Length: 259
Figure (spheres, rainbow, N blue to C red):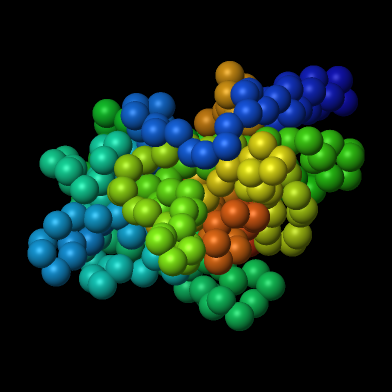
């Protein structure tokens, strides 16, 4: 058993430790992550836009964030197309947040699922991590130097207008980016998206979206955590809600089988 555990841990570290290749900004995703979708709403002109992101974790269940609370939780529209604004294939479901969600806690329970009316059989779901994965890595001194791939429909990199004020463009397209490990807390995994260190990351609208373990050729289908918050300018830190904790698993086990 010990040898099998060591072998499995070694394989995981090979995935997490490779940065693939350095990027400065996010890249258009295309069909790279078909399991990542957008929660949709319409503007005053009736145009679709993505207000949050999420991941299919079973044919009938999408994982997202509790703070992505829709106007009508009983009728949420989702697309898995790369461009949310021009989407034609929509799926409807019920938004179910963690019953203990509250931002003012060390563990805010900022996790939710969307249960679809019908199974989505054309997309392979992502995987969830095992219990205590990141605590184990920390105990073995193996978190430093690990990398993660964020995916979502949120804002692009910060630019500046003619008056020097920062602006963040929103194109409602699915993109991916690579980040590196920064810190581990009880409920959070903090990732660097500092361009000066070759990292990129998440922004407004990426909330609820996945951060997969590894990057490049070594990226896995295991979600380390969901994007929740970060710095206001989207240039320093992506703070993700861990999915390997007992707290997260207690909620998720009501909807999907856990590893």
